[in-house]
Length: 492
Image: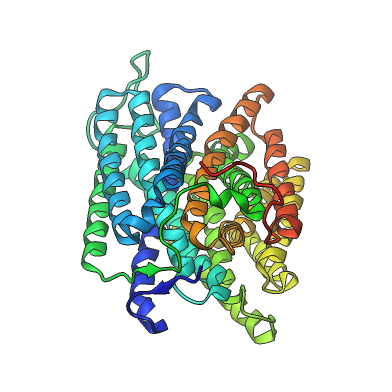
């Protein structure tokens, strides 16, 4: 199916819609990474084990699976909902649902019920599910097919910008600024719950930030309502059946998304607590290094937007990549430096530049081809995890943080590779890929359970190694566009 715009059919007319949708990528990246701040907060508030604290990710990412499964069954029986309601209405509905979920955090903190926090996260995940199903394929078809991966990487770069500043801003709001508002939290013994730095924690630490987030989502819904977004029509009307499952590269891509999200989220979720175990860092110090993990994904995605699908990578383009990479590094460091009160030494984060150089080298080896670059980056991630497993101290820490740079293009590349050639089944295929975000619910919990059994996080990182092994194979062979000789299931 060739998606064609019903209106606004010149490239420049796509700039405003692309910018508006990219705002959504930024916002849901920011809120998703707030889970990494919530985990140490809730672990102290409710005195949770490592595995119990990972129920936050299970609730949030489990909603992706449930919501996408419902979407899939509706699309298979009654036709694709996005094709029926349009991308614009889908985005607005997802934003309103996300805003309602953020409002639930206020009563959850007020009555101090872990189950209500998990419910709020589940509803938030449902809202993000619809946003993901609508926004990812919309960006992919909002321009030339050959540059879809580059375009999606650019939107994902702003998603990563959100995940980069979330640990800095979110950590400051939760553990410092709003922590002094309202009465302090008390543990089961009646003692004041404090941060690692000794500051008392309060319910307002999460209540007020999430009230702000709810307001932002509602404003974004209003902006989208007032913005003209081009609609797309194809050669086929909405159809039922499970046609997307006839495509081998999509089905294998579902497992790739499952393992990619699971591996990436597992590392990000445990990083604050792992750095406390490894180097004795408190939350406020560790979150600065978490910003470089997620910031690496941002830097890599900007680089991917610059080169993927755009032919040979010459000297000029390599120099441009170096400039963009250094600018991204400066942005991350500048945010950390300002948040720390202008006292965070540059020397502490200079090792990041080594991984930035390796990242650019990886793009050159990948030759701007999405599948090849995916394989190269997965192999590098395996190497870095191996270094972490075999070392300790600063080397183990930076090898783990550096993986963020190589996670960067994985979502965009897997997604665009998996939906190639799906035609009228594109949105259904998108829902199946979003369903596979379930990996972010299950694998962090599994890693937390492994860490509990081993008495620490260090050797639990063998789990992400297995994830990246499959991703290397998917980029090498599994992403080849083809149909199954025999369908996996008959049309529902």
